[in-house]
Amino acid sequence: MKPRGPEFETDLLFSDGLEKSAPRVDPRLERQLRREARTLGTVLLKHRETLVLAESCTAGRVSAALGEVPGISAGLAGSWVTYQTDSKRSWLGLAPALFRKHPDAVSAEVSEKMALQALRRTPRAGVAAAITGHLNPPAHAWLTVLRRPLPRTSSRVPWSATVRCGNSFTQWIDLEATLGSIHPPLDQKNDRANRQVAASILLLRMVRALIISGVSQTERPPSSLSRVRRQAKTGKTPSRQLKKRGKKRP
Image (cartoon, rainbow, N blue to C red):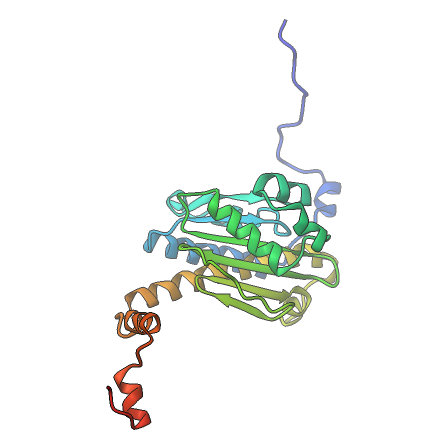
């Protein structure tokens, strides 16, 4: 006789008690999350980009929202939902020393390492996004988006508003202030769920902004960038700069 598995109710209609106790996200935020996911999905498919995610405080909401977009399998590789510190360490390979330095696992460095490791472990993806934060007061989060080629170094300003380096972008957000700017005000009872959705919306926007900015840089004619790099290696000064200084080229 085959062992029987646990029995469970397959009826999806909830009782009144469960329905009343379930936390409800503000409908405005839910609609905005779906809009942002559709917009990013369109951008990913249009530019043939593939995204991989490493989510902590959003607990997979970003990938779930993107998963509703038709055809998104061509632009979404997947998501590492690493809610616990142990998951970040074992699944993404983050060093234990990083968590000794940041015991709560909420910092710019942790966010950057999460995105970096997610991209390294997903060769098919060209863009990675990561988020880690606190949903309870004082609610805040660090968001990182990066794309290939990976930056060799990353200059960091502790607790700054933004950190940019090459193809990477890291942002600190105050979730309470973000929700406080919405009018009419949100229901205070569901602030935790609302903060989670708000953080997901902002991460979707960051990914879209990085992809679009990268495309515009690629389409821009390579006027003087390569020349400046060659001159930096040879130590020569551009003719235009010499003319401005009133000097003659030897």
